[in-house]
Image 1 (cartoon, one colour):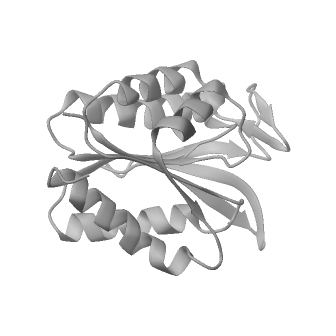
Image 2: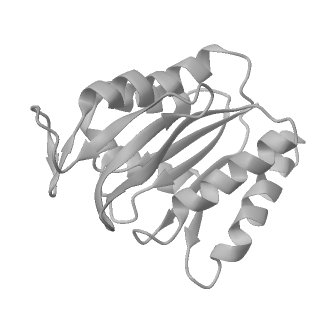
Length: 184
């Protein structure tokens, strides 16, 4: 049986990751095991200078991308992507979750231009899509990447807007509950 597949999209900075963090908090409160990865902004002096990456299960964190990263790596806008941490933390968190009976829900925040620079990340996401895990993913709204287009065509996609973002945590949790109970 393939459990629920939920994709979350919306404009940059609309609150996708904030919603995901609250979903994770509530799932853990209910005793539901969650794995995968989260991204977050890094701010210095009131401005965004990069993005962090975190393994949800272990809490290990690293740098996904930064404006002052002094190593070679792909560029996305003004940011240099840190493939080392993306592979060691991001891709590894997905692969690790797939190899274990727990977690029940695998979260991937985000599948966007920076993450798509890593072949290990792409492979990990492909393996997740082929698995029986329940998936909740955030996807870049304007991405034309093949993988993102496939997700958008096969997942239940929720677009976060200013008008609906307050209710989205409840909507996502209800969809997940129905899926875990075999109703979705």
